[in-house]
Image 1 (cartoon, rainbow, N blue to C red):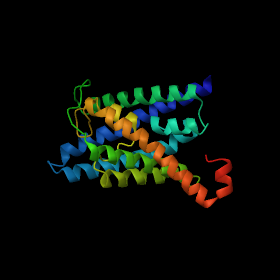
Image 2: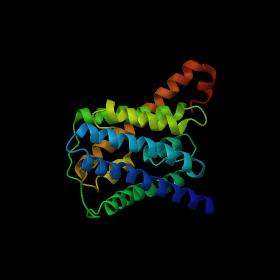
Image 3: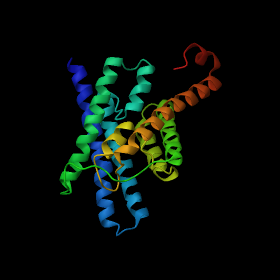
Image 4: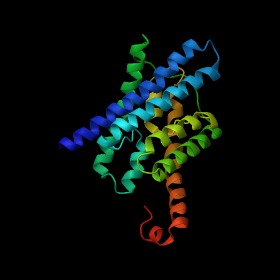
Length: 226
């Protein structure tokens, strides 16, 4: 029971801090960039990369540092999580993302409760989220031991710029951002499309990993594709 609570709390706190970094840095960047969106996005990207790296290093020994329902879902199918723990992880991640948005608002003296009005939708955005999330899962599954934090954060930083959606790659991030009408926000009506694309992308990433594993080690991949 104590182990379960530790994992739950770690996923809640880690996701909350991640969204605080993403949304808070977006607010600061927008205020300081004087209307230059490229500069604001660059500042938002750097803060996210650095923050994500730190959070993964800190929380990975405690809960695996998923902070992402798509990652937790894949790990459940890989039998690294039980379905009961998966439900707890997702609840913690969604609650944490919402709390992170509220904390960012409190630090910048904005109304705590708000809804985003930023529309992010359309085929190009959904394709971008499929690509972003597939790449994220591929990086996670193929990272050498001890290098996951740096590789994941570096990938997310790159994907901010090579995807049209700025790489949410995380259903919890999409959920949390809809509570913030700031630079990093997403309108609630756009969230289902993003989440669907992210889940599809996660399993696409797993499929690519299986193909690569089979090409590298045909016998082992046949016996255990995970």
